[in-house]
Length: 503
Image (cartoon, rainbow, N blue to C red; front, side):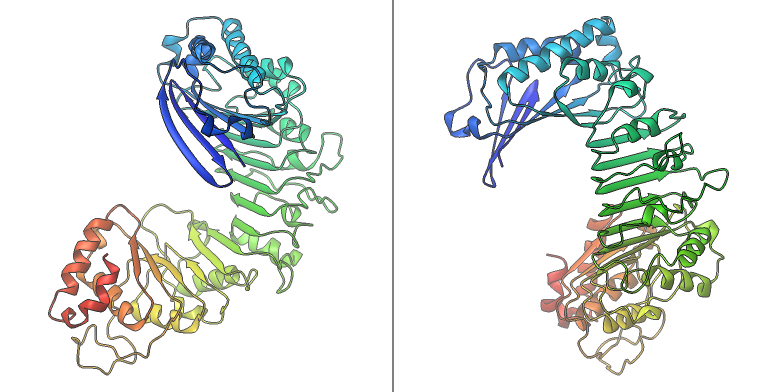
């Protein structure tokens, strides 16, 4: 596959042919053609990244016209991707009417189309400042995208990411393949209609909203008929506010039967198991908030059985902390429920929606019977070293673990050697032959020699453990603590083996 990436005003050309990438950067205006070795006739997708101001003011078209691109320069291009970035001072630079701005955009796209006359797909990504404009520019309600639609009626619009859904845009847009909709405030009355209109073609849908959005509008037409999305392989639905009332039950609807990737980050967004229905044999990754209402629904509907989701590889269950009584046994029950979803899945992620200082205290060693786990991500679980050792011992395929910074938690179980001080001594047999990486979360206040000792002791126990990463921006400081601990009297004799963690 050959791909050309082009940036205005600074040009970044990236051409990929048979997996080999060449990159060059040039400053516009440019009066010469690209060298022959770029094999422009092989390019199949053209990506053009633009500062929107240069398009709206006509500067980009002027620059493009001066470049020596003739008609049919890219005969094999079928897809053009326009990535439009928006400057904070855009409104100060654009003093023309929307009609003039739209004319500049249409002229620019027409020029590109002459260079790539076989184009049949167009992708429009708006890299908007989420604190600023509503669409391409602040006063536009999608009319510019609408104008492109009407000017190029034979082009399939692969992707758009509007900030405001004006009624004219919704009335015009059809057959989307990719829709990414984000709104940080306000309502979106036309969103469900826009999605339904492209139900037959949509492959990817991402909705991120702070206000409530009724998912029932995606499942059912106003006339009561069910909607199906036969091509949709990915749906991401993140709505911060839960629905005020229970949603309707759709007994026979199977709207998302082709889904391979499903993410629901909101509290109980469904009246029943409709989002999970019909896709059990296809689903490869799953992420959802698992509150008590969700658990009850999943149990009542028997959504997950030991053999129901054979292709599921990655399960991420998110707990709303306020919904779970603060008790280790209750937390353990929720976590066991989460791990019981497709127990064969090799990647398991368990987190919560609380961003304060609330953590799970459940002992990881309770979950010894999930032997298929290869990656376990529990970034909000406080751990003690002996529990981690027991967990690794019981999960023979585990290679990657993500937790909070560990503590020693007293004497590790099974210690007999006197070669280390009492608080870190151990003579475990080698465990975790496949274990390689421990990723740690924790503020700088949690960095200590104790955490470093835990990491080093685990490295002595696990023969292939050679990667430790601190994920909160304090990795350099933690590496310094690790290195100092390696050079301490207690660990210096093991330095040749432990140095692999810091290099």
